Image (cartoon, rainbow, N blue to C red; front, side, top):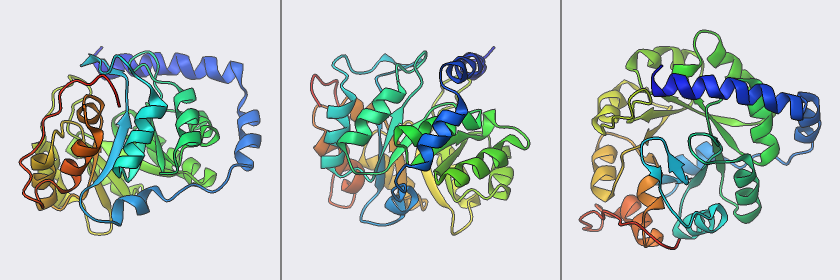
Length: 275
């Protein structure tokens, strides 16, 4: 098994256990009373500078523990105050040390739109996302073959959830577009090997038609990187480790958003001991 296959195998067991603890019917009743979602895609397509989805992530398989003093609420509040357009919350436990409880806590603390970032394979997980306060759910094309992707898109729409459809392999782009995705993320990290190449987005950006919002994900370090992406027509980025390791989140966020426009030279953040 490669890394992605191991994660997916574990996720199937996790979903089965969650369904036993909390039936889908219970989540459906709770979701029916949830307020409307905040405009996730709108937040990424309006406003000045590069729009940033700032990620709350305590660990990853490739980097290990990213922040020793990990406090998801304080970090999310720092992101919101620094100007993040949206916030992504990792909810995978075994590989990323995340939790749906983190998503609930962040929802209660900030007003910006939230993404549930996880390995979503089953409509049950969309119910979990909506009930926990997500406005958008990540769908990964590589793990949703055939009819699974359009099915998950329909289920999300039925719940009022927006979706960010992520891909790595270029061969998935036609079927992602055919499924009707309006917000597409290109992951610069190959989840099978964890190798990262920012040029991956630069290669795929010209293939994304007008009217579809494009997000570049992973490996984005500073305003120099966002400048390269913006020159290719990419106005939104998802940034986790760079912000999580920053000792000045506001300064790093401004560099990501505006650094090249204001003569910035790019900031390579150092490990931090506080948000």
